[in-house]
Length: 293
Image 1 (cartoon, rainbow, N blue to C red):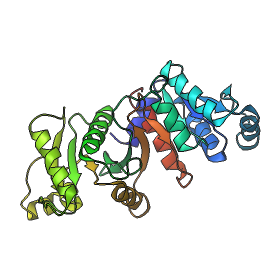
Image 2: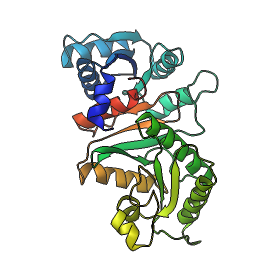
Image 3: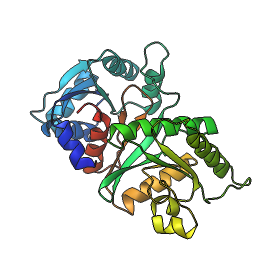
């Protein structure tokens, strides 16, 4: 599957999308375009006056349903409530601050947390198919246990994107275990867990350097064989720095089609960046709707 086929799948129904505090032009424009493409019905959760002013100024004629609130905190709580009760089936961040929205998502009684951790995944197209990179946006220095949960989140999402048995490469700078390089030790543990069937419906290998995770020839030069080396669907990075730099390299140097969402809630959470271009925003929205089309 790729973004074109995902969009085709989404055309089968309009999915209600709750947008938390849509009080900036970029968010409103993205919502309008996704609506025009036919796969969302938007619910704008925010302060009524700024929303109406933006709609009139930026997207005249666009009439999403408005859910008025008085504050940023109320907007986050209300948007999460809409998802929890089924009134919305997807959630997107607008101008609300990330900590406020995450607090509402993680609330023990009224939140929508599902997994053990929230993790970011960048989905990009490589050779015509989806590939996933995680986590470059949520957990700065994940423990081994958190890497396990990041991997589980990504595998579940990959399956929603049509990858029946994802191949997971746990990255390090080397493909052999070095006690001086903790990321290689963590990768080896996760790979061993995969061999023993502790991850469902996926193949896990590591430690793998980036080249031998995505290039079969490079893997064979290093004496690496098997189903994962050279063919990874999911790249699990050692830390947020690696994920952030690699993700932005994919976008800015590689120019590959991509989008990102946060996993670990009952629905993927769409978090657009102001630096995202038009297509990346739309791709992220499509990913946030994955599984409903």
